[in-house]
Length: 432
Image (cartoon, rainbow, N blue to C red):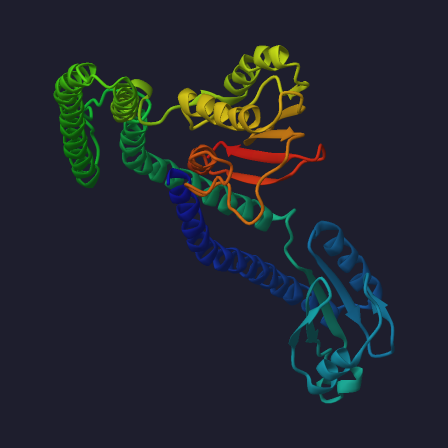
């Protein structure tokens, strides 16, 4: 925002300065040229007096002295017989027009302007063909003249005004940006910790203070909801523990051993389900609202956890694991569960001698885990990531949970046939 304000102010001020200073620069140049033409007119009057009363020799000496003293003008006297006294001899149509009409004229020429003044010598005014013409060439003002100095001052003035305006805009933008930045930093910390703190006092414009107040109220509401959630979870755990204990006592009182065993298994499953619900409900309290995990380290550790089981079974277990990678917005428990799901499917649904190959690669923005096996492969016509669609005697929830973990990180899970002839499961996890 601050940079946008500076760029917008710089563009607006630059356009205003160009609209003001470019015409001023043109006017300065025009005034300088007019000043030189005015001085040239004075020189013409002096030369006209000399030409009207002296011969060519005296006129030549006077013109030479005049040209030596002048910096930006060149004086030449053009006589009707075709001779010229000065640095620019030779006639053209404009000189002939001035001689024939007897009127002075000013013309633009390359590099400046030209003044032509016909001179009457004694009684020759009635004979235009006998009239000399004074030519004064005035150089156009350039950067090396006073015009360049004026342009430099105008440019320095423009830079000063631009810098001053940017300083003012920067201070104004800072008064907006810094409070908003502090507010943004505070809101970003809310998801990284398990606690929710109120917004500190924010100074700045009224709108920013109103925004801080709204965020503070929102934080208070979130804190209240989290407290109520923790209370409800604790109450749920306590209220369910008592009836489950009572059911267990009644199950133990059943005389039929088969029925007692079945009811005990169902009760154990119910107890595990309740514990899982409570654990998931308390996840935000344990891990924070925005967990960050070194995925490569966690996955590699969990993959090696299964290696002793493969050795006990005599199963070939090939590993190709990256050594480092990015942090992912996924909890450690989810990553461990992801690895366990993929490898448990292999160990449960393939023979003990079926080979397994696990590959783990990582870049700056993603982590990819690939599990290949030499088992019978995945069932045809079924989506293995669909809930309840295993087709291999299981519940079908494993790959669905793994796919959800990948999707939560912005990645995906794909299945196919491996080069070893069995199943291939590839999971891509992204940083955002």
